[in-house]
Image (cartoon, rainbow, N blue to C red; front, side, top):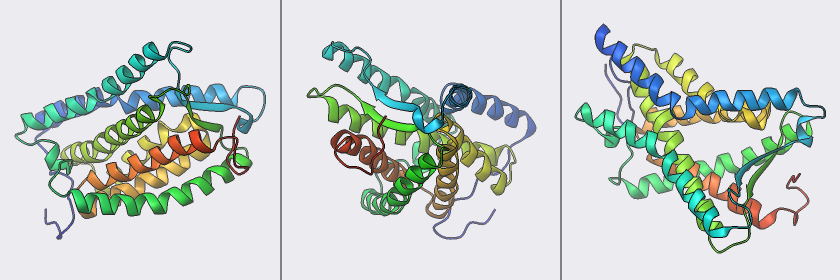
Length: 266
């Protein structure tokens, strides 16, 4: 398979016995991470649409207190949740190392920090503005719940935890849903188009708890991210972009909720 400069190709298909092993491995990784999140989001969405009242009158809270009134215990739970959410990424790294590869083969390393940062910031600037407008429009049309990015107590660790949570989300999603999944689907013989759709729909599925708007918006984002990954051969810029988007959403909501008229609140 020939690849143009600056692009990444999905891996070549393996032998049938190897494909069976890789298929099972992929299902297990997804079952322990974002595949399970997709099922959970679907159940949550069914609960929301069957509940009396419109979607926009319901709220989806992302970063909530785990131990109200007990800040140190709450902090322990927050850090525990962030750390354990990264375990599937460590599992992916382990599987890649067994192939004599590693996360570097997905472009998740420190070899190109400035290009990754520059590209990631540019992506975040474009998607961030359009994403906010799309969310507000989808909610006003009744297609989305009111998303509450954070509901943590006003304690000293609030903003550091929000930033860590944003970075954790970015690493898990971009490494698994883009880099790892596209590599495995390519090895399983999937076409580039089918792999793109699988990755994008999976991204949309675990945002379905936000409503139809959250699903559609993230499917579109998934298509864009897959194209950029194939062009650059690196998930690094995508992790940077996703981190900046989530930091903006989490920290921005904490600073602006109830203070500006255009930001929806419950």
